[in-house]
Amino acid sequence: MLRLQTLVVAATLALSAPAVAQTRPAVAAAPIIDGAALSGPAPAADSAQAAADRLSMHPTVSTERLAQARADIPWSPWVAMNPVFGDTFVETRLPRTARVFADVTNGLSPPIGAAKDAYSRRRPFLDNPSVIQCDAPDERLAASGSYPSGHSAGGWAWALVMAELVPSRADAILQRGRDYGDSRVICGYHFPSDIEAGRVLAAGIIARMHADPAFRRDLDAARRELARAYPN
Image (cartoon, rainbow, N blue to C red; front, top):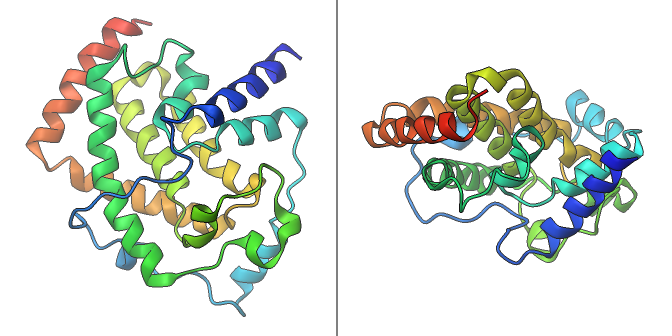
């Protein structure tokens, strides 16, 4: 019961904080990879995959898991990784880690935006409002493409990076990154294939970013910072 109360409070605070965006921030830069080519097109509307997507949009979950999905609505690495690292995992305490997350946002956002624009898939709640299990989506979310999922890409990218930086917690970090994306299906904001495409993009983008010496330097600085903050 205490865990559920904690999740409800976390969701309320996260959604009420003006500094935390509920959607992926736009970055005005050239994509570092061809996001549309890497993700490939969304399933055709009359395909078996699209039919499977629609059938998956009413998942039965526990009250606690639904509360976690609501807490996961903000697009934020600090929200995504809080269940693994706790309330001390905050930007003001970890400026070098924050620099890495900024790098990741700058790498992720342009390819994801380009892929969304290329495929313009309608979100599930636009054609079937009954799929929404979380809060009603805002106008910006409704206007943006469903495929690929920016939350899924963000959650998986942050998880890949954090698992590298704190390997002692890799299993929990990677599961958390996966759950953060899965929350979008629970809420009714994305189809499962949107989630998988987001993870594919995240993996490709993070791999490409490792070729950048400046990113590797930022990783090394964050690794030292996190080792001091979380020695076990």
